[in-house]
Picture (cartoon, rainbow, N blue to C red):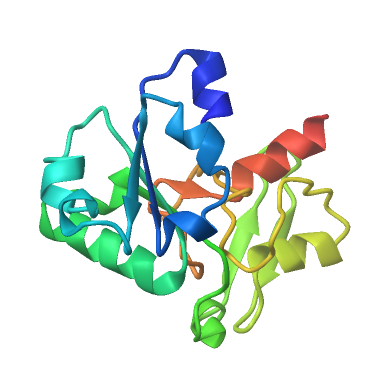
Length: 185
């Protein structure tokens, strides 16, 4: 998580939270990085993550990226939202799908139209847009988990209002542009 922003010269701060210092991954490397703040449940209370103190108020030029176990993520996200962080500034990547996966594919059918090829595909209740496109022979290489948790498929929506049935995308992102890029490659 630190290599890409370091290589690109990006400004960032990483808050690494874990239950125990003794069971933490990459600790030797993370402790040497001045942009990393460590928070452990088994260390003194003063070093634990607090949204107000550690993240501060929302900034239009700052995004909050959260990954980890569901309960931890829910705590951080709800705390950040309570502190005024807008949903579109909070990016998340879950290690496992949400419990109610049926809710992510439930709803009325809708159509996906690919701008460059003109192809149109109907996505029915219980299906995902990605599954329909792949079944229809469309090359959509930008995906990983197929569970709506990894964020690999995040791209800009070209038109319409997305009907997100996942746990990561927002109103301003979707899967359509990734397919368009693949079609022209």
